[in-house]
Image (cartoon, rainbow, N blue to C red; front, side):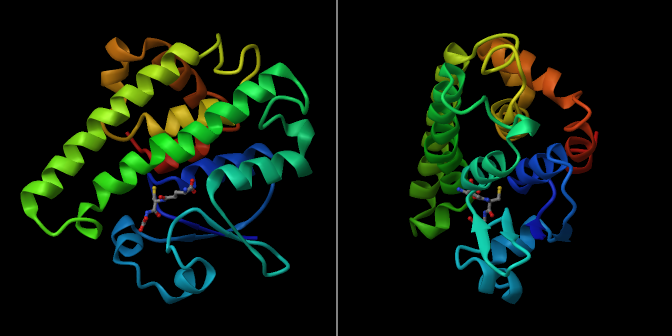
Amino acid sequence: MKLYTAPGCGSALIEIALDWCALRYERVELSFAVVAAANHEELLAANPLHQVPTLVLDNGSVMTESAAIVIWLDELYPAAGLLPPMGSAERAHALRWLLFMVTTLYPTFTYADFPERHLSDDSARSELVSSQQTQRKRHWRLLDRSAMAPWFCGDLPSMLDVYIGVMSRWHPRRPWFTQNAPRLYAIAQRVDELPQVRPMMTRNFPA
Ligand SMILES: N[C@@H](CCC(=O)N[C@@H](CS)C(=O)NCC(=O)O)C(=O)O
């Protein structure tokens, strides 16, 4: 397998998931600037959206969308425990909020990172960035109220905790969470230390 990554980006989620399943893969590491420029021929051929993570499987087929990759890996390697067991109440909770994170929270970063794709006027772009940042904080607070303990899905860690750990590194960043989303802050601090998470978390977010 070949994984297209960029340090500190959403590809960290899948680097961690692959480590968690003890899978070997080739990493193609690009800078965020290269990803943002949208003209890396190999990545473009694999994924016309030119996003990371993009995973090219050994049979040549391509997986994109972090949540799809996580669910697919969980189907192949259920014993790893990326998600709570099939049919459990915890899994329903996990799927609901995993999809929330990728369909509702993640786009606030996409719009705020690339406002020029949507608006030509500078002040309208600033307004879009600021409104996405406000929405994002609202989404984080909602997620905080939905967290179980000690992990997001209860007794066992899952990829939900990894999403919280990775995405809380992005704006408004970890210190904001201490006051505004304390349950998520505790989860994020805890998930960083898991042995299956720590190496890739450190690689993506060096101190
Ligand atoms: N829905 C995708 C989002 C992936 C995504 O937006 N990745 C960012 C990096 S964190 C990216 O590649 N952005 C470049 C772009 O959208 O042009 C997922 O969950 O995998």
